[in-house]
Length: 339
Ligand SMILES: *[C@@H]1O[C@H](CO)[C@@H](O)[C@H](O)[C@H]1NC(C)=O
Ligand SMILES: *[C@@H]1O[C@H](CO)[C@@H](O)[C@H](O)[C@H]1NC(C)=O
Ligand SMILES: *[C@@H]1O[C@H](CO)[C@@H](O)[C@H](O)[C@H]1NC(C)=O
Ligand SMILES: *[C@@H]1O[C@H](CO)[C@@H](O)[C@H](O)[C@H]1NC(C)=O
Image (tube, rainbow, N blue to C red):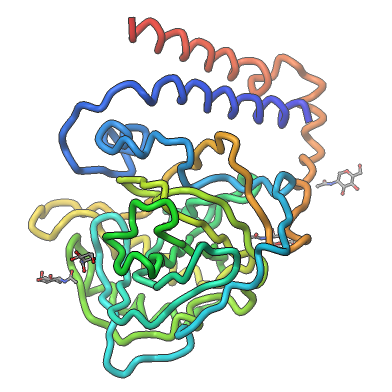
């Protein structure tokens, strides 16, 4: 318990330190960004100032802190998600950051569920890890899932995604977590085209799939909060819906994501770099709250494992003492650097 309380205090402290740092610079002129290195998430705000905002995504959902709001969070009403269009196809694309599927007809719409309007599905894409222990952008009580799918919708009143993308009520994204399990034949209709989109900017037309087949069966239980795009330019325009039921996918299917899709284009030659670990770290809440559509979604974190007693009996352990001093030191160094 001591350790957990300290960790929470530390994450608040880290948010405060970041809060001091972020308003700082906005100078470099590039428009490249990555998940690693000098153009990685810690630097996005330099080129894309919205990324340093106070309503950023993803977040860690702390289930004990959610507010149950059954009256507002009625079921999301889906229309068109069960029909397969014989004419319209999907465009499957490797954009160098993710695998993205664009819906070419605008037939899939959602409303209800406390959403501020009617929203039209535009595209869906994935965030996955190099191993099963990571990959999702959002986390639940600090735990990540091996993959997360985002179905991106724009508010119909804005007409298209370009108009909606930076409006406060512009986007609604449905987030789904994956768990390793049985082979998922619906996703295989996407995965088996991966050979055609190995490199950045590759795209291929594929038959459309009724989206309901890609989603879990139970959609009544979800979390809701206000946040942002999880990639630059990080506009704070997203009403987030994170569903409780997960999607099952086989390990070998996750391996296809991990080993077939590269972030470089073919012409770069040499060694190809896979896109795995294309997730942004969780962001500070800055006072925001997460709402839940069902009372079972509010529950305490798993109690700490029994061996935590050992840590508590040993107050000089590194977790409880050294790390906060490292943070204070970091703050000092940063302050000195800025002077
Ligand atoms: C989006 O809508 C705006 C306003 O109606 C229009 O000017 C623009 O061309 C549209 N963009 C696309 C990509 O369709
Ligand atoms: C797909 O790739 C082709 C050839 O590179 C390109 O002309 C086209 O604009 C791309 N389509 C989409 C939807 O990105
Ligand atoms: C879904 O809810 C159950 C409790 O009802 C919980 O054990 C589980 O961790 C939740 N999963 C997600 C992804 O929210
Ligand atoms: C922790 O200890 C209790 C009793 O001391 C035991 O019942 C429980 O199974 C233990 N839990 C774990 C995760 O080892």
